[in-house]
Length: 485
Image 1 (spheres, rainbow, N blue to C red):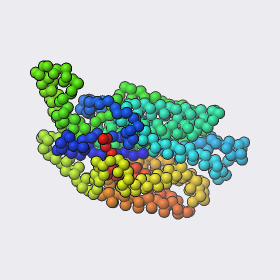
Image 2 (cartoon, rainbow, N blue to C red):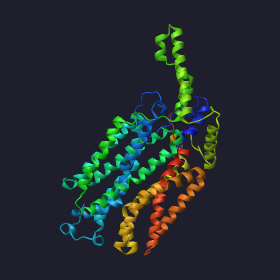
Image 3 (cartoon, rainbow, N blue to C red):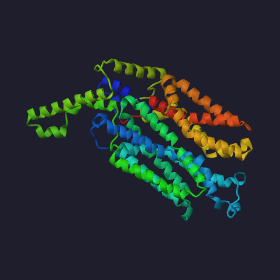
Image 4 (tube, rainbow, N blue to C red):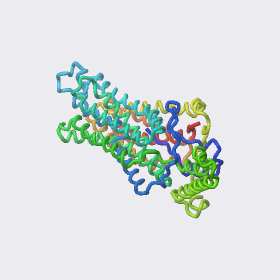
């Protein structure tokens, strides 16, 4: 999963100096398949300035917390897998071990491991493909409905997993599948909260990204509790206790979190500066015979538009008017970022089909397919790989334990590095860095009988994973962003 690093400030500056009739004012959409759903009713833009600062701060804090507990827990599979093996999950599929309780890691047949890995593979695919319907639902119904759907999917997944050992069918794969589906609904619908504080949108997105990467630690903590309890805290007890997470997510969605997405600064100013919004044919027809009353209504609308511009300016913290020093400095910084990228907006404004057929999209898609396969395969098979490479199960367990802790910590540690690289280097440098580090990880993963190479590989991998996710999203947002017609 990943984030779009789009600057609200750049949108603000762009629309302030353009005609409202131009095509670039069309609303940015999360929905890549807009024809799947009927057009939503037109709503008045909702700005962050219409909500108290305290409430917005509470909303951001809550979103970071529930993303930490739900957004990407399925990627903690490497920590959960030893628990499932200890509990004998899918043991019945291996005749040799149906009655024996003495199976060790070295004697576990591949069919057993493959069955467990299928569970993670299904979940990993679901997490990424789910972004399409999440975008459609988010555009049509808003973040509150998305969050509630996510909590429902997490509930279903937890119940499947909790009672899988007693059910007449395989409940583990569908349970993990629903947990994987719930994460994107909760996570992606939180992106719009970066518009609650436009001047700090990068920090908010970084916190959400860090929460997503760190959520893989949930299963690590569970495994530690499982071992400390002498295996009495079974998966059934854990997932029944975990139900409190989706219940609380649904509760805050209904009480605290916004029903509609916060609008970007660009959307607000576009709406406010367009004089066409002073004319509402349906309403104006009622006062067609009273010109004084009609003009008064339009004056009120015009005043409201100007008020929105002033409030947006205040929200951005610009001092000294539109030409203030702080605003000018921010504008120059945004312009500098665009110039550094080298190819900012290469495909903006072009049709979706033309963008999809372009080398900009095709090549990054092929790269993504390869890297996602490598990343998820490594997460699913790390202990098996290092049992073979180090010829020692005990050494592989130590590597696996280190990986379980490093994966969430790497997501947090890499936040400042990601911002530094993406904001201050060119697209060519970023792509070259991704390819170089991926190649080095591949080389380190082939060195046998070398624990230092194994630990170096783990450290690089845990730093590379969030960098890769964010860099690809940054590339897409800056070069091939789609717009509604």
